[in-house]
Length: 396
Image: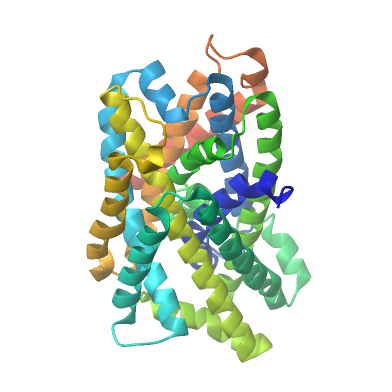
């Protein structure tokens, strides 16, 4: 457990980001775009650079990035970020409740199972997060992510009949449009979007600090995003095999499970359903635990209040109830529509984060050993330009 602790913050990032952004978007992108397997790899690399930059700012200043946005960039950030946070929370919360309910309903089908299970799982996540026991939360997430990665990654490559086709998938750009929403959803959504800010708070929970903390974060984030990329590649392989995809969550999951039945038998389908559920529920649980940190920080910064344990504050617990309960209304929205909207909305966070890291991590108050190097600045600039241009083209 002592050795595993080095990787726990990264495992939390993987578990939280993979559940919704990679499981479903990856499979649907594989169906609509084909085996363009380099997309999740590039997306994971971009997320590594962003998350490592978030950690570097925190190790340099002792403050989470949200503090830097408000205290270093100015109070004008508060309102736009709060509006974005509320919109993101509703859409992501809805996607996760929807997907969690659908996935559990494929294991234990009941009438109106998506709605009943989705609501019950959201309430279960409240019960796990609300007491503020971070060690217990880590253990549950470690178990879920272990099952998720083992069941899906270890079996998905059985669907590759021609190894050459897999190799070409890492090089091909056939029929790709840079403004295709599924391309942007995978590139921007792989490994999470707003949830990468939670990494800074998990570092605080684990007591990681200074230059040694940065070295450890480089290791655990490299592991995290390697697994994330591999997982999304696996889902694209599965999605590419689907002759059609359903707009209903339970049917979509059963369509993929049927592939496992045909290839490796009923036990393979059961393994996939279990892994799928663990993936989506781990993402829901991670979002419910991490996103209230952001609202609570905004609240206490605005009123200039000192906080000892942010998880025990009224602002944190209130936002937990908001993100877990209000998005239940989105259960009436079509599964595929909310999944795509969630991924695309999340992708608009990326340029904001990239721009802020270019400004803040090159500031005069940042010690030299924590500043961006030229390669990091270049990649952040490319990320910023790409998502601004293509995000605007997609919208307008």
